Length: 331
Image (cartoon, rainbow, N blue to C red; front, side, top):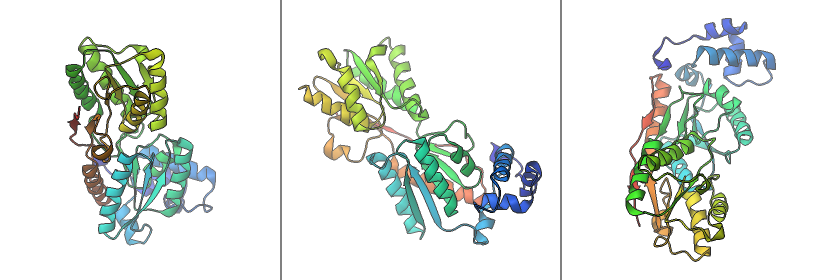
């Protein structure tokens, strides 16, 4: 891993960018207005090319960072995501630290605005819960300790990732579905712009095909990670009174929307149609006893995130953290 190589110095960055060490320092510390856009661009490129990582401990001792962290969450309306955020904030509060919360709403442009604000705050670290690839993400990754949670960004492989093996989990869930259902199956995936959604869809399709039960193309829909989008996809899937023995969803939010449409059509869940989700939102045990899903350990996500952030501040090499998952088959 690059983190294990000899560390690049700020002097080397300055030389590569053709600027002074002071200019590099101003860019790193987000001192807007003190360097020209052209200089900032050259410095950010040199930081990325040389994989430069500032000495966060030294900056903290000089008062250049504080005890405030930032989290950018893709959707505060998703109960699973908000549970992860709450757990991380709770652990930071226990340490006397604070957390700023930003909601990107799965919008790259809005995420850019959030990250510009994060950079101006000189936070001690950034937790990205389901990040989108964007220029500001690359810029801040070279300046501030950052962790990806639940979704990788392939163009930034050196940023530590915390999650599960989504493809493996989808394949295991697919095997369980095939054991229970002999009829036709439909798939409502999450957005394929997301590495997590792609891995889940790939796992489902690979296992169904390996068992000689491939899902027809017309029975596969792509949804946003929301109830409304899940509902719209279910409307399309179930038109002309078409029926499925099981509908497999990319996450629980999508599954909630699918469930509503099925109930509008008078379908008995799970007798006539079983619905499968992913994540096991904490509210499921109270409100969705019909939902079969994959339990993703949100508390363990939080514990791992704090531990990895500590290692980043120490300058330790950190690889991906792959956590265990469980199938929740409520039937």
